[in-house]
Length: 216
Ligand SMILES: Cc1cc2nc3c(=O)[nH]c(=O)nc-3n(C[C@H](O)[C@H](O)[C@H](O)COP(=O)(O)O)c2cc1C
Image (cartoon, rainbow, N blue to C red; front, side):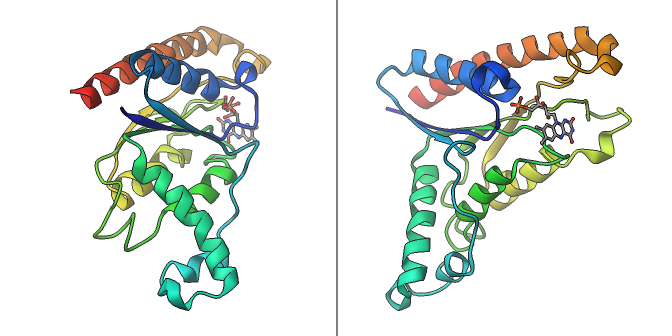
């Protein structure tokens, strides 16, 4: 039975969050396909993981037998997060754009799980894992838009997840989510609505495809 690691990082609850609405749709389809499967849910907004510390960092590059109690405690947290990633057959990440990049809670999770010699570098223990990222944003940063050069979510996550971890990364991008509440974006509401519908459809399709692929 397949395991899905589902990570949310929006500060808003599902009924007010563009990314959570889509991760929720993905997860529901996944669970329909895999009623016996396992979903590990990490809500980084309500249960943030610790920021990387000197103890957690240095412990990653030294023999566990030599760890101080502080290193051992900090490293145990990293190992738990890394094992969740390694155990996952597929990963789903809600990554809203906050001040042009990812929420700091998601960065803290990445700082814990990126460990050269295990998940990153030559070893890449989660290599090939399909990761679907729901990259919601209030504006639009796609190719050809005026803000294209300010896109630091997909650019950054592609580098970390695909290049560092060796994962197979896909993005679903609900954009212009601020249009309904920002009067200056009123003309963009139809584009926002179309983007939201497309994202929900893509999430259901992707979840189904992945479930079928992993069951094969
Ligand atoms: C702290 C904060 C910073 C934000 N910064 C940006 C930004 O730089 N660019 C943008 O397009 N939208 C920005 N937004 C809007 C969010 O990207 C938008 O509300 C999106 O729907 C967030 O996904 P969520 O609803 O799942 O949290 C910001 C929102 C918050 C709360």
